Structures are given as C-alpha cells and as structure tokens.
Length: 201
Image (cartoon, rainbow, N blue to C red):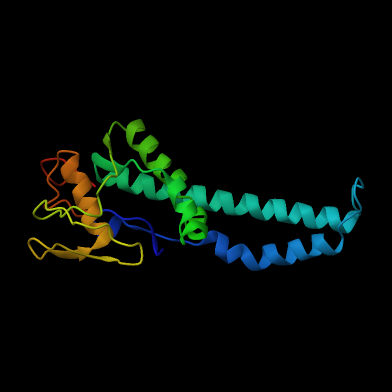
C-alpha cells in the first residue's frame, strides 16, 4: 500500500506516511525493556518497568497524533481545492482480513475518510457517499463491468470491452464521480475559484 487515498488528481493523492513503521524499532526496544522487567502476578512493577511502560504509551500517542494530523491536513487541501467530493463509503474492517491489514491500520484509513467527510461538510461542500460495490470492476470510460473481481495485488485496470487502461485506484475514483452524478473529465487539480462549473474529486 503506497497511498492512503487516491483521487482523480495526482496532486491530491495522499501517500502512505508509514508513521507506525517508523516507530517500530523504538517500540520493540521499549517492549523488550518491559518484558525483562515484568513484575510477578499482582505486583505493580519496579521503576524500570513503569518507565518503559510510559515510553510505550507516549510513542503510541505520538503516532496517533501524526496519523490524525496527516489526515486532517490532506482533507483540508482537498476541501480547499474542490467543492464537490465523492467518497467511497467502504467499511475498513474488510482490510483486517487481508494481507494489507497492518499497513491499513498504520494508514488510519477510517480516520482519514472521516476527516475528509467532516471537513467537507463543515465548509459547505457537496459531499456524497458512494456505494463501494463493483468500483474496481466497472470501467470509468465505457461503463462495462468485468466478469471477475481483480485480486488486490493487481494494480492496473484494463477494460475488456473498450481496451481502456488505467491505474486501478484512478479508475475507481472516476467511477465514483460518475456514480455521484458528476463527469470526471477535466477535474484534475483545478481550484473552484478558477474553473466553472465547480470541480469534483
């Protein structure tokens, strides 16, 4: 997983910052310190154990703040540059059963989605939730639907009907705009202040 969120505009895609991965080495060290100093059952633990425990808690809190800050800053940028936003109304729980579970958790996908929706509505944007069914199977160019679901490792979408080729997530982003009732042509990166009609992402 290289990106947390993909839009119709390359300039507004959100890359995976991997805050959790960056903190893994420190976390492992603090957890080893806790394991070595683990007190007996029912005992509070010594100063070394308590100090290591506090370091683990602080590190978790720091990573959580970093994820939240990244999501909010990205949402603010998208909302600033667009006044119509289509969001895939997926349930992130399904990723917990996939090979991307750890990366999805580190990306805080659900929190990022929530930040975008809340920021958009707060600033009066037209935010529409789009049902996720078949977004990876439909062609944004001709509307044809593939006969089989694409496996997660396959990142390029190729339409068997019209031959349209696109990065998988980019095609899905355009499909969502179409389902929201908007034409995705010409929406990439434009500011609503500079273009008519209002833009969508």
